[in-house]
Image (cartoon, rainbow, N blue to C red; front, top):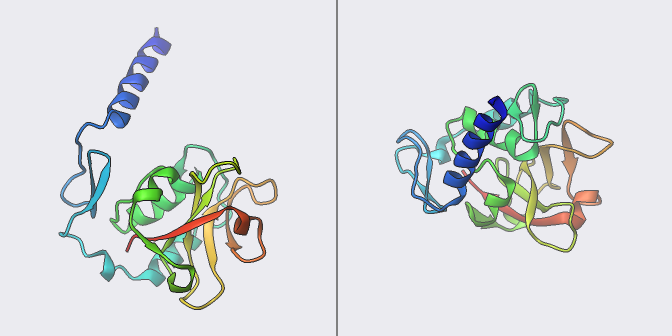
Length: 179
């Protein structure tokens, strides 16, 4: 009986999230999702968020285990980690990595800076669908480094990686400015 109740609730929530109905977060959120599009809520000026504080906060979770579907200090998946860090600073970002494709502003590699979100293809090399995200921790003009929850065999935890010369270089899709 509990399984049927759980499945009913799960299906209802899934339907509501993906049916395209209009919904939004409270007025304290920086972004709202309206009919599957993200819009800015001007009540919070995310440009005033201290990017160094954001990176220091993110680094507190280095070594936290990778856990698919999770966004807590007990474990993170990549988008859960990104979501958790930005939420701490009252910046609402997508919970799913694929939602970053049409979210925020596209930024060139040369213009990226601390606090930008770097996006990668998932493990299926045949598609450009975003399947992995991280937060850029390097300054503009420096080699791109990012912090992320990695599910690789070598680093099954929150870790720091470099873009150039790494496995991620082949999977790179774009960088998004969210602040």
